[in-house]
Image (cartoon, rainbow, N blue to C red; front, side):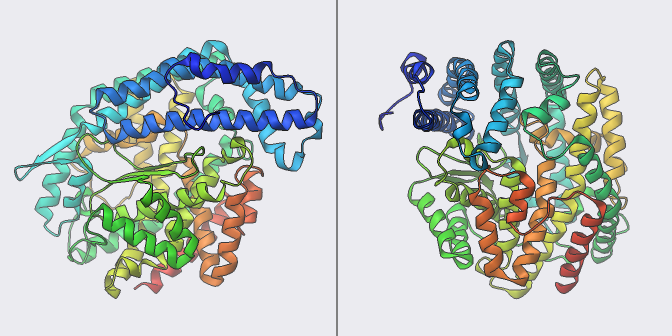
Length: 559
């Protein structure tokens, strides 16, 4: 395709699809060239879509940017799907298929066969509607702000006040944030109802009883089952929650409180000011580059390239979509990092997390086909979460004071322990939602309340705040725009802790294994990629306990 290709109309793009559709394949060499050309077309098209999505999330208030995104969703994507199905059939039916290197193409071909089995022409307009609806949640969340002390703040910016040493300030801002979320409760509930109904229709039209079963196939979860997820939930419930309760009792004691409230969870328990690892987005980036370079020079160079190419948007502002992501841009080979930094320690963690994703993108650039780079989330999140912990050994770049550095590491480990039950309950909730897709609002509230009570801290007092707790799932972006994409964080978190344990024992060997695993992209199974990283893909209670014992010892070392 020409280097200056600009996607303005479907007709202009379809020329290349028709060429691939009609091109004869008379040898294995023809097949390999055809695959490479298809890969190039995929890279160009996906990067065009990526930029539309990136620009829209950077400025959700721009009607022009939203229209540009919707143009692709409504006028381009529906026409590419049938061609993708046609190409999959052409590939699988090729008499030269058996001459491809199965050790390299095996995982990809398994995915192609799966896509063929799932493809339904009648689902294409449903996917278009879902894509439009799923962005509605981002727009709702982006429009949320609170007024405090005469100034307007995004919810991300307001979160800074939850770290205040003044409990009255924390309580006030917590109430403002929760009440603002409650203002859109009805709208958000209605959106979720509509998403559930439409997703169930997709599942039914594809021959599945429910959307959960459909998604396990659509997401290519060949290496684990729903039962494995349930085993993970149970292991976290038994092994992690008791430790979190101990941490909460210690927090309550340090803060000299009779009752621990939700607004007490972000403040420093000893009354110190919140950690301040950077001044602004530019400072965050420069320090992240230095931190990555200390791990290995190449890691810092990757972020330097992104800085020079302006492939980052880090600061929170009004009208910007919530959350953070790293978007691979495989045609140009340099990804984009989006986040909402507000000067908090957790923003540092987000930066190194997304930086791990970015490094993964760089390390897979050499792979021959786009399909080889479509690694599953269980692998993608291993890359990013491992980088959180590996980089932690070099956070002296951000914290010159030894006590601040110790506090930051302790906060990171405690955050991991606290997030594992949340990951479990969000995933467990989704299983119930789609297994019982005809549920009422009251049944959904009751089931969420039951689950969050079982997986939440027994120490935190929610008296008088029950409505906020019942509504707390509304804050989870993944439920709306990435269904079932969350348990991967739990699996990958266990893997990342194992990588970090290895790193503390032998840094060079661990980094070599880490890079070897990431360079595989998705040319091996998930367990094989984890093994290449020197760790296990394991959900058992025994393994969870083994990893947890290591974390508890590291926490003791920070006292």
